[in-house]
Length: 138
Image 1 (cartoon, rainbow, N blue to C red):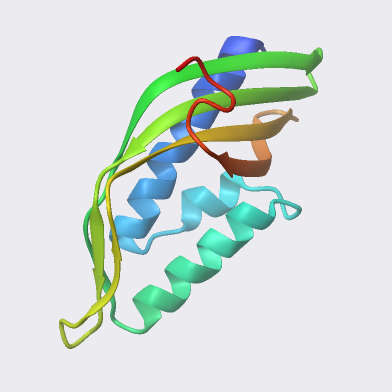
Image 2 (cartoon, one colour):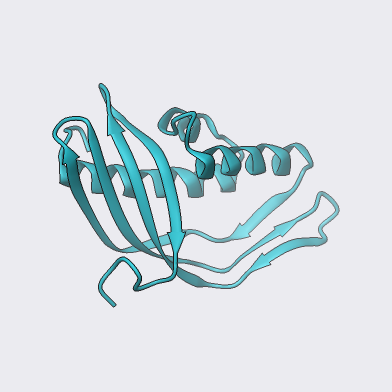
């Protein structure tokens, strides 16, 4: 992840997923915000959701992501990259401050397509969530 390369892009995307999980579990969006470009709609939406949820006293139970496949591609050396991940997300429940279920998500699989850039470190510029197998080997 320390170098601008296809492997580095895949590692950065995997790291982003871990930071995303951490932010939802703890409400700490600092590292997620640092990795996310201002143009990343997926990133900004997630950060807003996390901040609103934790401000309302909501908590997350379960969840977490397992990465089953990761691949990076160099688009423009030392500048632009893509990464494709197949992820399995464990079931999760979001509860209100009073303990009521607000959102319940079942276990699921998705393909994630990342656009990343390198400028003295990685930035996630976009994330698209797609049906499993649409971007990765089945």
